[in-house]
Image 1 (tube, rainbow, N blue to C red):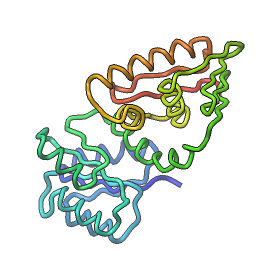
Image 2: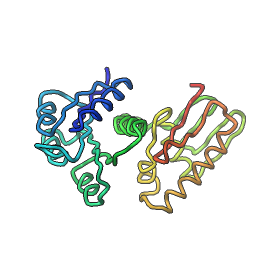
Image 3: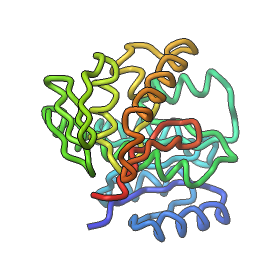
Length: 229
């Protein structure tokens, strides 16, 4: 069954294009062109995630999000906006936004972000998994041991946690900020550079397995691509 998206965007041309793009990528999309229409759709149907433009007639995206959260506080929300003002971004997150994207944006990046948000519940369910057999590697996160073909490695704590997140998200987008919050406990320039160093270390360890590749996704995160499941 396709995941259901409520898209509320007052630019009808842009909304129609975005709806078509998401539909092609196997989502069931309901498009509303103002906040009041969006709220009506939300109260009448069930959705897995909402995407709201901020500046809209009748009811802006922030007000719509407040109403939605009163009905179902667990519904994920992504804000779209042409404004890149710090106050707006902070307000969006204070309202419980899962992400905030400034126009213009890469639709492929939006797609990865949607998938990552929807996958969070699945990740929570899989966090207890300790052993992974992927392509030609065997990884035991409890023992911090990685076997690539005939070679065995003892991982550092951060290498271990980072590889575990990549394995849980395999073939899907792993957001950079998720790893920074979970492993480094903070997001700043220095922790981001530290994470890049550990990604480079993991790539070096996995290089002998041609069926695996850690891919950069628009500087926003990473994907463990499994070529040989």
